[in-house]
Length: 299
Image 1 (cartoon, helix red, strand yellow):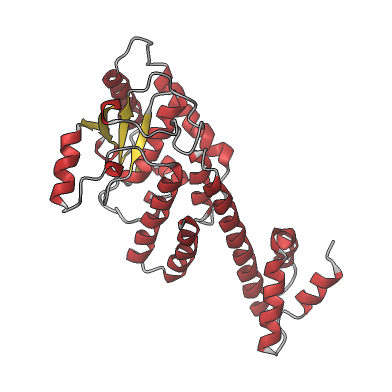
Image 2 (cartoon, helix red, strand yellow):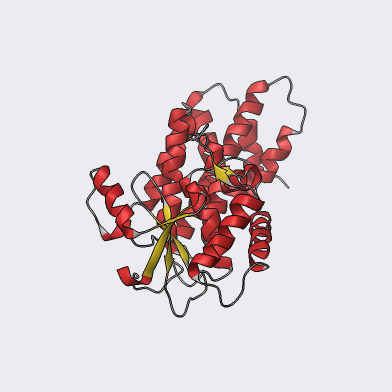
């Protein structure tokens, strides 16, 4: 039921006084998600004689949903245990109707296929070979070199559908499947790239144990067995290749470029990648929204 206040505000949507309209819009947005369904229902009413109202209603709905998404992201950043949930929030930014349950079910399917191939006595490298075979051969995931800066290569729901992505999104799929099987593979936030680390951890906790899915103490160099490049079909490499890479791009050999990063850093990297994609695609509206979201990650 429409409250008297909202009813009055809706009546004033097309007031001739610009200042009145601005205040009306601000008040409706401040009402938040409680009025979303009412606003959406108004779009189904006969408004053909006033197309401006349709535009305004859609604009108000978009702003309310965006503010709600920012609130959800801010809440998640304070407790970023579930990486999949964070990536689901990222997918919601696309404007598509994306269900967390649906994303999880797709990843569970990949998990099951890997699990059927696993044995308890396999080495770390043998487990990675199985992950690589299932994800890159059986399901056909690959890097999208042709349209590298397409936003679709960032959003998890699109990557799961198209089986194409960028280094970050493919690494996220890889890590989420591995962690569901308690295989200790986690993201490493390299400059201009993103890879994975296979850790030698005696007692692997739940992937939702904390913000890293690890203990509160960062793993030592000896605990990192090797690295994995998900963008190159799971190619395995050693620490020395990160040394060469960092030297080649004139970056200092800092520990943060060798050790797993937090889930919050992964989601921040997701939005930075998305910002680059929308910059290349000249979508200034999305760029502005992403800049607002990135401010949430400033400590």
